[in-house]
Length: 331
Image (cartoon, rainbow, N blue to C red; front, side, top):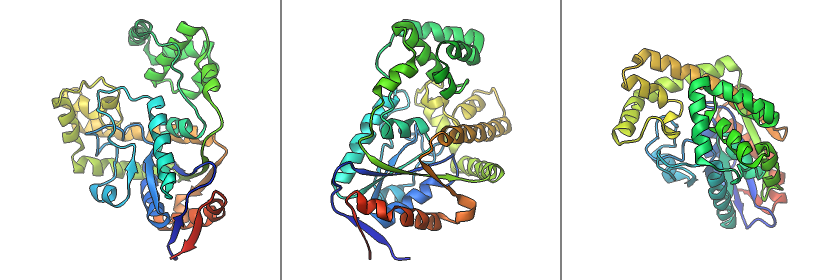
C-alpha cells in the first residue's frame, strides 16, 4: 500500500488521532507506523513514561524510535516530583497545538485513560480543596483500615467518583475525600464544572484482544523487561535516593522489585506478582475505556500486525483528515 502524507495547517479545531488500549496490546508499534506514514508526532498518554530514569519498566520507545519520530510527554519529570493530571493536560494540549500548527498530525498513544480524558474531554482534577493536614490524616487512616475502607467511605459521599476510582488507588481516594472535607462538594461535581467542549477534533481507536492471549503477551513482556535489566533499573532508582514510597516508584514493575531488593520477597515471587498485577491493570484499563462509546475498536488478532492495523486506521480516517483541513495524498 502506498504511503500517505499530510500537509497543510488545520483550520478550526486541531485534529487528534488517539490510539488506546490495555498494556502490551501493541499500541506503540501501531502509533509509530501511523506516524511514519502520516507525517505525525506522538504524544504519550502514559502516566509513568513522564518520569526520567524509568525506561524499561514503562516500555518507553527505544533511542532509535525517539530519533526517528518526535515524541512528547516523555521524561518531563523526576520520580520524586508530583506530576498530576492537570499538569499533563497542560503540557499535552500545548504539544498537540504546536504539532498541528506545524502541519503535522498529533497522535496520542497510551493506556492511561484519565490522561486521555483530560485532553479530549477537558476532564480535570480541580485545584479547590487542598489541605495537607487533612490529606496526612486520611493517609494515616488508610494505614489502619486500608484503601478499601476509605473507598467505602467515598462511596457513601460520592458514588460517582467511587465508581471511577479503583479501591486500591489510594492516592485518588484520599484526594477525593480531601476535596469533600474541605469544600463540602463531591469531587465528581467539581470535575463536571471543569469539563467542557474539547478544543480538538479527536478520533479514537482502541486496540483489544482476547484476555488469555493478552495475558500471554503480558507474561512475555515482563520476562523481556527483566532480561533487559529492570531489576537493575529499580536498584538504580533506590540508590539514587528516590524513596520507594514515591508515587512513581510505586508503579507496577517497580514496587514489586523494590520489595525483592529489600529482601521482603524472592525474585520468583516478585516476578509472579508483577505478572499478576500487570494482568489486573490491563483489565482495569479495559473497564475504563469500554465506557467511552466513541472509541472504534480493532481486534488485534483478527487485524494482523501493526502495518495491517495502520492500514485499517488510515482507510477509516482519510475522509476525516480531509474534513479537518489536511490534504491526504499518495507518495
